[in-house]
Length: 394
Image 1: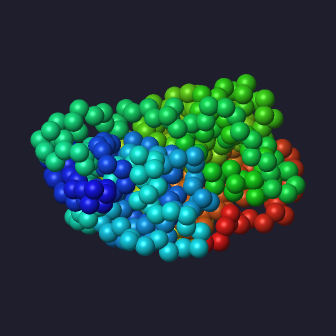
Image 2: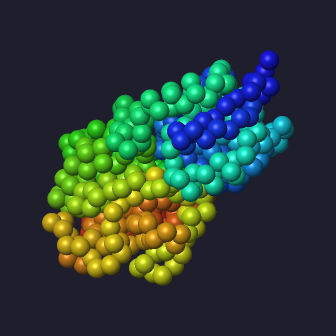
């Protein structure tokens, strides 16, 4: 019997049960149930290390239309713990497709479930919040599966960065003329992120999550970058300490997603868990410094605990909330100035936009300009390289 002919069961930690068909590998899996609202880009989502430990529910009803190609992976593998869809496409139709989504999930041993009411499941999580979940295509006994779900750890307090970071330094060369050197701390980095920096003349040294200040100095970095990543930001203390050292040494800092939460903690701000988080490629964000709204790609279940009110004085300078979510007023960005000069900034979303809108790609230019100003060479802040060129045209 093929996987898509086998029955499967999904059960949430509150006992809510959904029955459907096996999708991908046959087996059992557990994690935190979260929903992602993108209507496209499932390959990038599944290979995003930020989703480690999570069972992703696709809110778009029809998934798998374009199959799976060999160009759009954002890392070396699929990281999600499980995948939940309503109607898997029976046909993969794209000139770059090499195999079906179902086949790739099975090949990478990712357990999923299909033919369930994902709309109802999403509404349930929106009302009650994300929670632990289990999927099984081996045993359809809900009580047994629920007991296993309740025995799994929660995302709060989970230190997951060590599972996804690189174990050695990797250098991504600048595209065209080299203008800057960036040390990028891999907390779960997506491959498009150093690519976006390389397009702007940055040679990117991707370093492990436990990199020291000496490791950063050894690269000759003009700036320090912190990536996205999974888990509870309160556990990423090594990165927070490194950020403080960089700020004390007046090295420009830029962070995204988990990097935003690391930046906030380094400046004395706390973090907290959101009810159901922001995941998708259609999240509206207000830039409070310009009044402009960007549609952004996001994936986070935690947020920085700060107010969009008055700026806060810290030992490293003055920090203010630069961006907020227009859906729920969650902090979406921080800006640090020292003596009126930009010293560091961070955003909660993904400006590299893989997949997603390109509204926020200017932030990589802002990083270049900040490094140029710090180096005393403001003319180097604008690259003649082509920005935001896609790796392939779909």
